[in-house]
Image 1: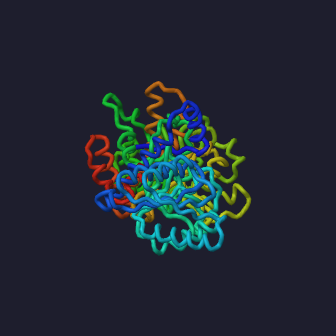
Image 2: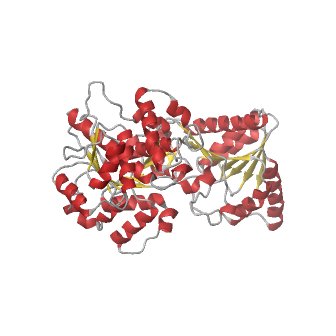
Image 3: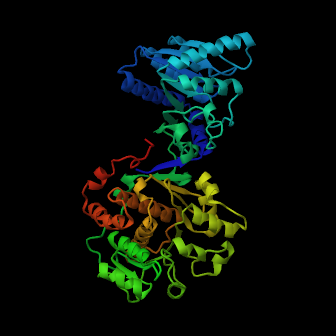
Length: 529
């Protein structure tokens, strides 16, 4: 189910009134950390008793969490070693660990050379033979970069590491830049408290965080203050819009498809097929008569005559200008949602021109891959933006593009990123590698178009005149990606994905659990627990 990510400052502000009221947040965090560590030791060694646990202790509160947890593990029979790395650490936590039998090694930058070498050798010995190490060096308030004596210790320990590593709240010196990664800690698990921090959701830090356990310590965070929402297959199962028993084809939504051209007719077929199989009440094909013949030959239920539409998918297969102009004229003055993909992205030339065009003042979802977004941003910003720059920081660039265009930006990739104009992110779980094939984006565009049509039709027939905020459209785009993922687990070609949608959507509508069982492969679930 959905997991929300919050800026660290939001979480710290939520902690303040509870701490002032005397609520023992550290005790809650330490208890959960100890339980997580004990579960890991039992899974690996069958018991806690007799195992070796080391703590890398910094000066802050996450060191306190680690030290109190270590004290609990010591009372359960683990041999605990505390390695203090600064001139100070959390005093009460250190006292508790000592009382539980922990030995302490002081390895700080202020030691004399002889003492530092001896302490360094002792620290390396304990780390190398530890079954589990707790990283309590720095938390969210720490600056990037570790002191030299710590980074060199980590680099020398890494080749000899045999045990597991749990990062406390957040890995120390977490940085998406992989330069110097050998001198940073790579956790098997991160146990974070209060709420998921935004620093932990960047796909570029996956190798440093490992699996992430989010521990509720009673902060009562408001999802409206979240910076991002992470979706997995359970969100698709609960959130997919199912037909109402009293509905009809128009209340289910009419998807307009302007895709394909005489040069690229296949794009029209793929987009229309996926729109049909996603469960639209009707699909209306709006493009070339030549492509319409292919479409109707496969899907006689598709309509090519003009009429009402609840959403439009525009762009796959570079449809001819005359048909684009027809759609623009038909949509002028209304708020029909539009999904723009592939060749359609060239219409969004400059941010300031959007206000006076037919694309303005309506829900607009654009679906570029990195190279397409680079071309778009190069035009918008008047500088050369490369696909490599996009790939190096996809979340930031998606947010920038959404801000410039006013659109929901769905940046396609293994880790698809969806950004709303206010900067809010939706991050669906990754799909299978089979989706990286020609025509896959056309299938996704058709899915998006139908989900948008269903949403718009529901608003009209349910007498719900409210405007859906951008964050709701961004979440809808996330559900479309998850549906695309499910189809990708059942086929290896774009036409196979489009056909598989009928099966997946049938299971979602009729309430079978096959979607869940088919989704049990790698990448199908969120790594956030």
